[in-house]
Image 1 (cartoon, one colour):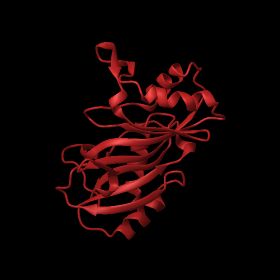
Image 2: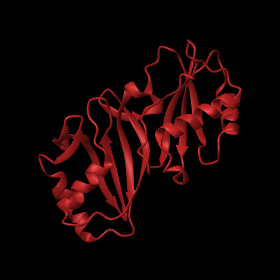
Image 3: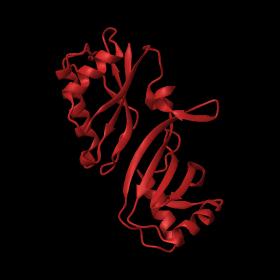
Image 4: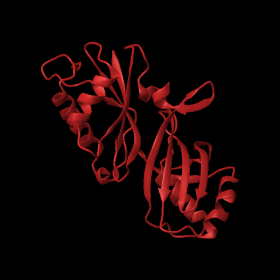
Amino acid sequence: MKMIVVFEKAPRLRLIGHLDLMRAMQRALRRSGLPLRYSQGFNPHILLTFAAPLSVGMPGKKEIMEVPLEHEVSMEEFIQKLSAALPPDLPVLSAHPVDDRHPAPMAQLAAAVYEAKRASAPDVLAAAIDGFLGKTEINVMRKTKSGMKASDIRPMIYDLRLTGNTLHMALALSEKATCKPDLLLQSLFEFAGMERPPMLITRLQLLGEEDGVFKPLENL
């Protein structure tokens, strides 16, 4: 069996990179005493996978990882034991078991919801969003293995709204297409004729797609 685990990476840990996060989770899982499934060979390791790495500097409200287990464990026992081994800034929010044949969260991932907060939001930014989304193409320069290339991110923007001083974004995040929030914000502020201010970007939710409808990834 496998356990799909939802956890938070609190703002205090936003500067910890993905590899460090993986090591922290692996150490906590080993300390937990849970019946973990390890790889075979001379250097066995926990078969732990994450739905999507977080960028350095970005907290995550509902991050998802998959933990394979040797035998069945109740949700309550799993959460209790893992929570006891984790620091307060990496709380386990929920967990549920799935069959080994269940698709990996990474394979089901389609999009993510973000928020970006700033000290103030001038009227010019709110007015610019409609015109920005009304463009048929939004070309940005992406860094690729072969160098910088232009890419149209407009089809990858599913939602963009301003509420008070907070920008809400739903963006593509999959093997086929990904729009990073940094790219979107840079393009938006350039369109609005403004210098991009410092902003705390938080990933709020990972989404999968079922029958053409986005749903929380942990519910698929």
